Length: 363
Image (cartoon, rainbow, N blue to C red; front, side, top):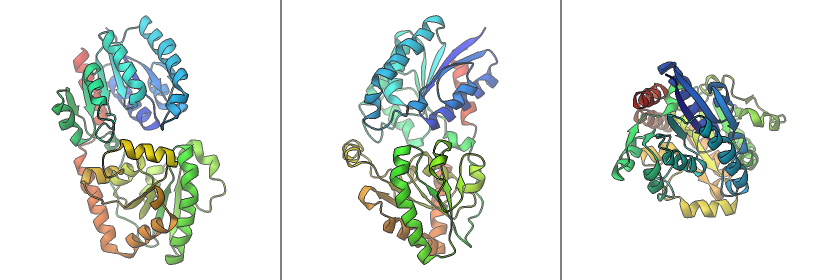
């Protein structure tokens, strides 16, 4: 007898992880039928793709407000209409709290089990969301070791699955040092990209004054490749990206998924992050943890220098990179600290474990 599972993911990384779970579900049980709201990867992995919400780019403090009516229309006329025709045996939600908590409530009202894979960062801001998750979610499937204790302390069923990036990030090679190769990662969203690129370019000029033989590689998501035509160094998009990253000595990167990927590859780095001043003020009011980089959050200390807002200057960033490259011991210590973080995140096979847990619980 077939089993219908509905998956919802709203950002690019969530789409990637959701697609991997979709594939694993079909391998775990060939009777599983997947419907999904997500992005281009879920569109390929799902049997019945309901629409692309990733391309809406509903992030920040204003975008979800601007897109409220669009998202409400998708929720009512696409998702709930589909559920009226085919009631799912389970719903899998991937991060994207603002939309997914409404999906969780609707599923709960229809007695559909809800598995929330990749927790919203309630440990960083807006802890009041935990009460809503407790109301509507059958089980949290978390990816960070400290999240398990957090949800257990609130009486919420939870399983730590390990981090899904372990399924795709290869074990690191030794660091190349002569000549040093510096990777530049401006961010995957266009607003961040436009804000960070001038800072990165100015920092490279300062670095070259101190390290003339330094080489640079620019890493960008496919949707922004056309913005990179005049850059004076190689531009790397998704194809073969991790192979190219293993050539890096140091990275200059935004926080978020890309910094964690570099952590797992053992690439020493410095992190920059600059928001509009209004968004920054709101973020400072909401965020209650001292770091924005996952490596630092997990290590509970600054193993990666962070240059945020007014500190995100070309001079500070260049100084951070030059300091790393001028001291072989500092470079080695940074790499060792990052690889220690990798060990905290579990073992590969995360998508398979998620699929097996869900199939076993709905059988």
